[in-house]
Image 1 (cartoon, rainbow, N blue to C red):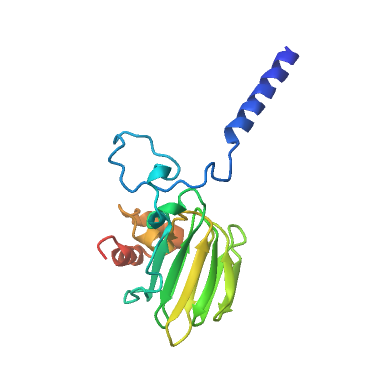
Image 2: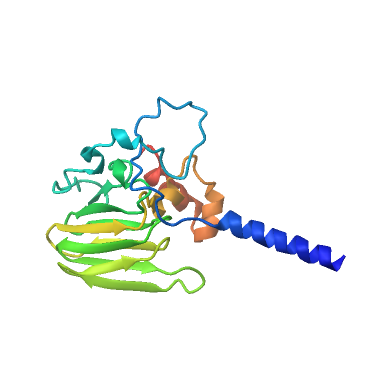
Length: 226
């Protein structure tokens, strides 16, 4: 009986080790993402990434993106604009685990508190002065901040809430590299107060210790129609 138990445990351990095994690197030179899935059935199973284009049909344009020299429009409520270069705009990034973004800031504009659930971010300032920071996870919730000038670099660990704020009187520009072909972004205020459908105000009243009227005003401000 004991021997059978040990064998069973060993088999389960082996099965779990095989199930969790993965190759962190691409299994071919490249896997250019398909933008048009028309040749696949609508019932096709989604993959963790994109379907690969036939390597024989791949062109140099699949690895090319232009326009990152063009400033983004910062005429908005937060005074910033993020131009993302990920697998959706540069198909050749598929399976390569990297992407980047240009961030433009108006004077005193900010890239508000947000997270990247699938990637670490490394940021370099090209122009201007930015006040940046991130907050660690519970229970410490420790805040790390730094004022960055032209040429300075800062890292935001994967999944942690972080921000960038232009403390200068002139425009600022930064470039961010991300350790994912599609790092994702969750802007905290938009997600909490602008979800669709809205989170029950009583939930947010309790969570943020705010008056219900304040919560409802915030939901109007960040709602999907704004």
